[in-house]
Image 1 (tube, helix red, strand yellow):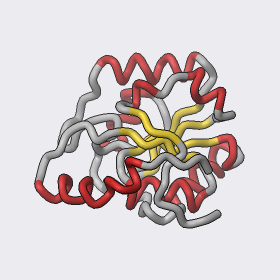
Image 2 (cartoon, rainbow, N blue to C red):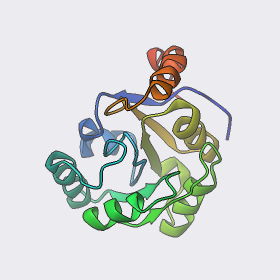
Image 3 (cartoon, rainbow, N blue to C red):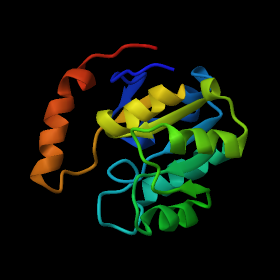
Image 4 (cartoon, helix red, strand yellow):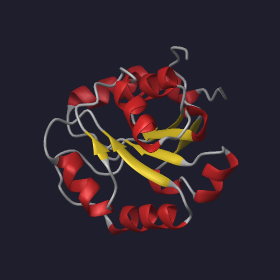
Length: 163
């Protein structure tokens, strides 16, 4: 695996990642980031379109797994709402949490993707683990530090490079 700051594909929202798009990429396992990917920071609820999207992916045979750096109870709450497994305190950009999800599901890295909103954590972790990175736009900026980080990520968000 190699260190890369470029995602495989970009989507406006996580709900734009369709079963057809995942099948075209050969993806059986979709690993989900939590914060600003499936829900805004500090919330403990999921919007109905996200729940419906996840149910549709599961019906299509896609395995879903949450891998989050979050240390609180949010990963567990969202995993329960979606009825999927989770790993919290994943340590991204380390690939450890992604590799653990792969090991627990028995899915090969080339058959997996990670959907996340950040270049410096999600994208690096996915690329180091050898899974495809599907970058989504952050749901909401809650503070100036997130806006600054996003600004610093712009060169990598603009350019699309297939891996």
